[in-house]
Image 1 (cartoon, protein in one colour):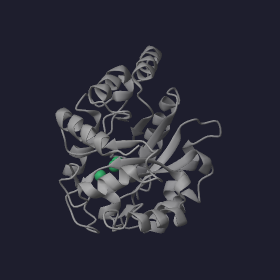
Image 2 (image 1 turned 30 degrees about the vertical axis):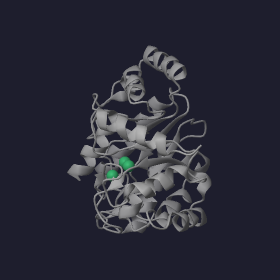
Image 3 (image 1 turned 90 degrees about the vertical axis):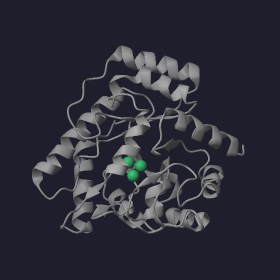
Image 4 (image 1 turned 90 degrees about the horizontal axis):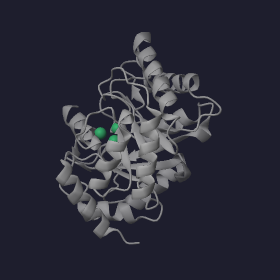
Length: 286
Ligand code: ZN
Ligand code: FE
Ligand code: FE
């Protein structure tokens, strides 16, 4: 848990959390790291109130992004929300936070919003899935431009989204499936028991059969500190974990994946990210 939060927090390049408020700075951090895409938190990842977006900030960011070839923003919801919480107040907090995030993200063109489906605690996955879809149906609307992504989870504790079937169950219950997709976290699926290190082709076939590769919108590219099926969710730097660098190179070059945006959530610092990005660029076969 601690490790995961630390790892994912660093996605924001160690700048203050509330990136949505400070888009130009984050664009620059992405550029400094020579990354093409940036991942941001919509607010402090541990929750809390977020400031309204400043129109001037958005315009400045858009200009900077266009000039420097920075593509799509992937916004990450805070970790503290649980859309399938047992207690109604827990669910209400998720509903309010996500609705507020979506309202603010609507100002940013070509933006995607990723969230962890939640933990069903003792309610069972079926109830969890129903509740998550219920929250999405209450907060999403017809004209919404932001795509909402479900993240594949490691299956730690009672996490929902531990396999492709559960994600598909959520997608099959939402009112606006065309506004939804999946973000595949390589550490999470590996920890969840999908061998993307040794059997990438088979895992992608399974994803395609159950969810559909057309729904796959983004990749969180992480190595794992733990073994296949460990259900742990502890990210490792690229090549330093059990996925291995060979597997990561296959992932970034796979024909079904290579056109997707990749986002690092490795436990690294700015220089470390720059090294990882340089390594990925060198390994990319275009
Ligand atoms: Zn994680
Ligand atoms: Fe995440
Ligand atoms: Fe992730």
